[in-house]
Length: 152
Image (cartoon, rainbow, N blue to C red; front, side, top):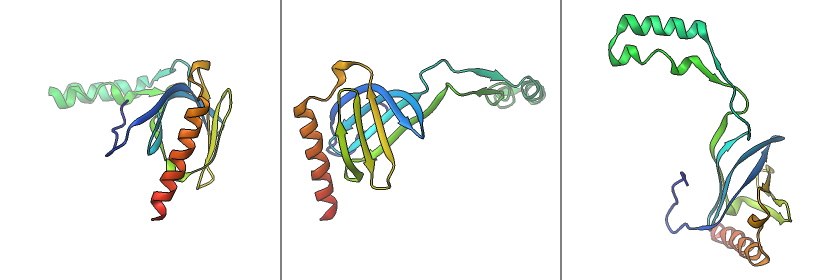
């Protein structure tokens, strides 16, 4: 997990699967903690298409060669490569539990709505990742507790 946990935060459940955002299905890992819902390492589930801008690469390499040294030499390639759809979309997407509304679980995943009316859909990669009835009750209780704490 790349996201740092905050004070007294612990992971309740880790699952792999598909997160749907703006009608795009993104693959990654979901962490339910006692305070947040964290989605990490999302890509589109397919190999990135890397396109090299040869004109830009030649120009930057020439400038880098003229300037020389570690600074000039570093100008050669990185910004001349563009990752097209299929590449990494985001490192993390985070929702606070107290901002979640109407969470519903089923055999394929879960869905919820944030207080900003943003729809959250997540589908399990493996049937073994499903939330048990006990886990569903625990998550629902965590959301209720988080909402109670923000009211006080």
